[in-house]
Amino acid sequence: MRFTIFSFLFLFALSLTAFAQNSDGVSAAGDVYGGSDSQAVEMNDEWAIYGEPMPDVMEKFTLSELSKQKDPVIGVEMQVTGTAGKMCGSDECFFMLEDGGSSAKVIRIDPASNMPEDLTGRKVTVFGMLEPIEDAGEPNDGMERQDAPKTYRIMMRSLKVYF
Image (cartoon, rainbow, N blue to C red; front, top):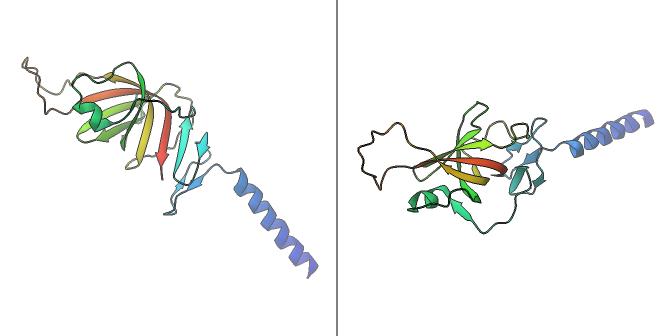
């Protein structure tokens, strides 16, 4: 009987140790984030941050807010929030950020940084530098369309994933 109780306690303690070393986060809905290939630098019950720590900056926008600006702030590091679209799967592009008809290719400055494998459909905030991308798919008739969706590239240093 003592052996059985001791064995149970030993296995229980071993499982707690393994759980404590795991960097996964679990949302209120039970979704698991992280894993052996992605380690959050900061995490709480609402979000996890990957890459560099997320700095608190004055420039915070949604992607749709940026696209509505006549002259968006280009070349300045900022936080941009939107929904993670499709994963690009190439070294150049990590995933597409989408919001209000606008999109941005999110590119990791450090491709070796650990990030979650799939973010599709998740609300995210990206910290990085915004760059414009010319839309090669639209014919250029010399006139700028105000209602045309705008495409950007964000050179990402930090990523906040909301649960």
